[in-house]
Amino acid sequence: MANRKEDEKNERIIRGLLKLTENRRCINCNSMGPQYVCTNFWTFVCTTCSGIHREFTHRVKSVSMAKFTSQEVTALQEGRNKVDMHGFFSEICQVFFPFALKLRCMMRS
Image 1: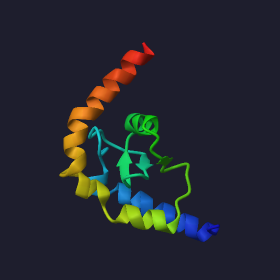
Image 2: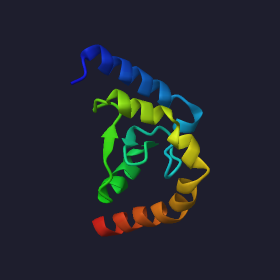
Image 3: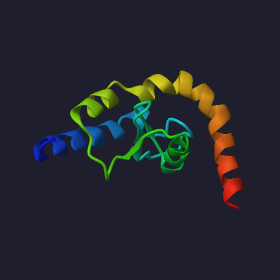
Image 4: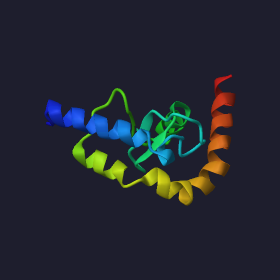
């Protein structure tokens, strides 16, 4: 189990990562201020997209509520939002996530 100092250090690093240009927007829908991490892809996502990821049984952690291990922080530091913004996720999300969001809203009404 990580000690308190390590937890605080990891939290500071993650908060710093959220300030980077490539992490200021959700990787899926491009909305400002993502507050979750999808640990399947190591990307920052918004509240709405975090729910969609959960529906696909992806593991999602809250930046403010969850504890991150040093290994998880290292994975986030590799810059998946920056890498995926122009690759895999940009193409998939432009097509699929708007559809998934509409479908989700229709199912709830």
